[in-house]
Image (cartoon, rainbow, N blue to C red):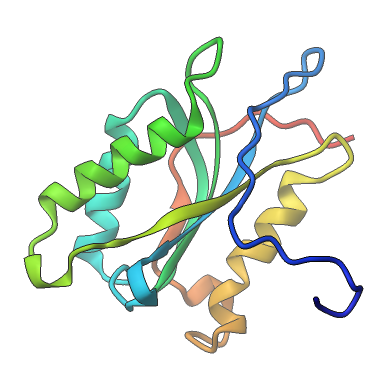
Length: 161
């Protein structure tokens, strides 16, 4: 038990995206390296990961931040109805793994990831501010603008109200 006496979840719950009217579906995902190895914050790893995301078209990646041992990104379905998120995750992770130059660093990925669909009252912009400040919180840079391994592959249509 933790502070609020609620049981902690050992495994993330993966819910299917829920479409609501004409509201965009945007999912916030965190994926970690196996044993939290610091593998990802370098130009070659970022290139492999972003190329895999571009190749894996069932979901579109919007804004992202790649840190040494974990990755945060926002994504939206690239097809209708949405292809299962977990299947898409396995696909692009497999692409990265097959191209990974140092075989001694395998396996690359933790077995599971955390994902959560943004709710109607949440702001994509506010969530992005939290993500882009992650390198500052981890003391990797002093200003979020200085972190070179972040960006946006696709503009995800989200209308903050």
